[in-house]
Length: 316
Length: 310
Image (cartoon, rainbow over all chains, first blue to last red; front, side, top):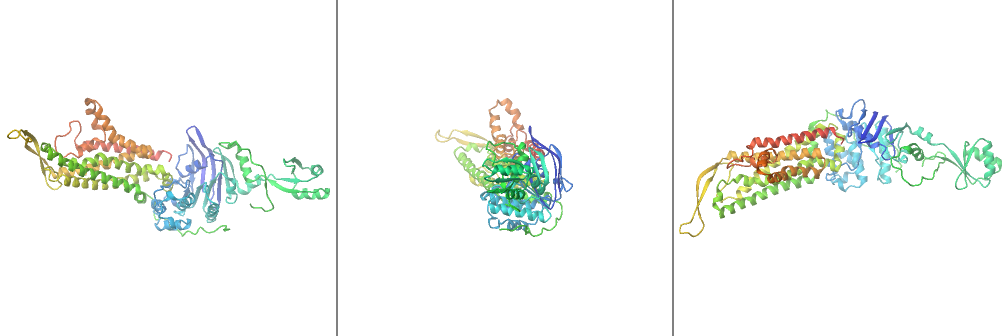
């Protein structure tokens, strides 16, 4: 259990984290979401004691991180994959970390095996790809068999296989009862991994809820209909109390009725339908909407076309 | 690859035997030092430069005395063998001292190091102990080898110093015109100065200790500046460039201030014969000046290491 209370951190005039309070519970994957520059890394650095908060406290299982007898057995953290001395071999890198907490030497071989770096263990890490560096970083977090793991943007720059591997690893770690705290600026990354979400923007808490609640919040559903007899259908659904908008491509967007109800209505009215689809804001959109006011640097790019089709029980 | 939730497949870790502390961090810091090539390159450079120039200086002294016998007077054979070590070797060991902490910042490793061991004072102390130990051992070895190689190079020249017995050099020389008026002048020597083996041992060991303390000065600067090039430049500036600048000041000024700078001790500690420099203190008080610089810089570095965001 990691408890962040009233955390505030300034760098010069800039407030990176502003009175942030939340808790991270064991046994599940907690996603830490926010646009770039929202303060995710700063929060993690404060949890680890790398940065000192201006205000507020971070308590891990009731005490400060620095007071644990064997810190590596409590928290394994990967903030930057490249935060290693590139001139040192993977094995020696892990060895020098393990020695600080008096972990047995054989542990180094075990974590190297787990992340699949055994063959390059003697190689200097400066030659590693980003994917290999991430694996080395993850090996380091697991050295102490920690109760909590913390990853900052772990899938950045990874290939699909690496992304899947990290996702499965995080789920497996949570399933073993560990606290898993993982940050990302991409909602899509969290969709399949996180059980709980903490969303921040401009250093402030925006949402602290389960993934289910977040999904529910995101699906303000509408139904897109295309029909050659638009006027007839609009009349019919309006009578039933729905509101109707028109899309750019000649489709109409109906709110207040389900796709089933609209289909039945069209059948009764004898209206041909060319398309009938439930539309909901994607999680990505919900996230963008939530954080719209808190994006640090707005791009000038035009906003994305809105909707994503979701079939029944779909899980893209 | 449609695996969903698998086991982590990591063997269980035996439970902790105690609290992580200085012992483990010392082992870790030693692993860090021995596992990067730059350590070996720099130590090799230290030995090659110090010993190599000691040999060249030895041949130079021998040749000089062969041509100008009167130069035997008051010749300090010990300092001739150690001068490269304390003038140039100190600059190389400053690189090791600075990099033992700045390389953690330039690579980002410091964030990883402080995450696995958030007790910063322990890390700083361990770094300091490992650096001091390695620097002292290597400096002692280099100092002795430089001395022996330098003495071997000047053997037969008529001047020498020894760790095993006292040696003598003439105190004064007089030059007379040669009989008959042609040829080189005749040199006669009057009085002798004795270089005892104890004095030589103190110089060889003292110079090594001085060079070790220079590594610590660079380490303190590294902890304060947290940037490799900046720390090395400051260390070289303090130990080498500053003394050159001081040389340019009017005598009345520089004679008053030169004893307060950390480089002065090297020039006093390596001396085994001849009059003492009137503007510097004797060996160990002068060494104390260097040591105070080191204590202040290492202390300030340690304070900042603990207080600043990493």
